[in-house]
Image (cartoon, rainbow, N blue to C red; front, top):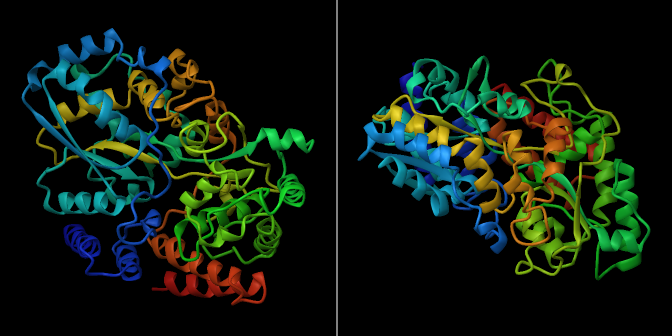
Length: 503
């Protein structure tokens, strides 16, 4: 099949799915056959984000500092003059950067440049629909693309490599943009496909350890540094405080992508891997079985409702004082600190994920899998090759992903993790490292987790069906008692994965 034919078929398939004319399983399988890995799309039709984001207002103290730097405004005014009257369009998932730009920041850009920016904030499946239709038609309806990491390979030839734009558009280059400031682990794990950069890192949700310090102090516990300590801490809390308070919690709804996310953390944390170097499913080896046995023990320290929760239920169980810890998305932390969100403002602390019992190196895995307890799921921002206004789009992209704008996004976006090294040390970000809404006091842990504990799922077209259907359905059946042993459940996954890969 020629590339243009594949893109047209993919656009038709995605459009049918979003329109409710194709079920999830057939969509995932069809997308995989057409070469698109959409591992984050296992949420079911109309269910929104791939992971949590709570739109938290910044503190009153931060409000007075939330303006772009004079240097940035001057550059925008100078470079944007030729493009005054232009309209740029972007379709994006609801993420902290997109919401902060759309709701609070784009007015500065528009006033300085005379360029109008239209941002459509949509559920992820609808973002994919807009993107596939735009690529297939080459009409350039959208000037900028939001690229989920699982889409990078598929759309790498439809966007400009930002390094090429820096070289070819020197008159439009922001002097302080510094592309080398992006965290190297994110460039390699999110924004690159083979030797091309598919945009620049835009946002980075990642698993960190979060725990109730008051409960830990009361029981003489310390932040868990190993998998076994996480279990013994959780058991001690459940034994002492249950059934009113449980030691930890999870996102373990059967058939949901969130369940697969939890599985990867325990699997990688016990020296396991999803695929071996021969690209065979290896999640059912001894390490995989050990991970499931550990998970069984840990689940006994979780609230009874955990089997029905995705990330939202997991987060609410902590914010409402039902669970005392979780290994999950760092974006929850500012939500916990907001006194309007729950009962635990100021009581939570952050730590890097517990150390793996052993860790498989990437050279021993398949399909680009990178084992690490800090499961991540990031995205990039790119300029479309079909844009009618690529120069204006490049100016906007530099502004939106600059260190100055990222610092504002981090504070406005509820303490989201920056993708640039320098932003972690920006005075505006450091000033918000206090208890309250939009806190950034957890960000040193986010940075350390990205640098030393980050795990990335495999990159293959079939991963859509495997991660969002095959694995979480089988795991759900196991925890419902349909499989007698962990090995039986994992062997079932292995057989199904082998069949999917065989076509």
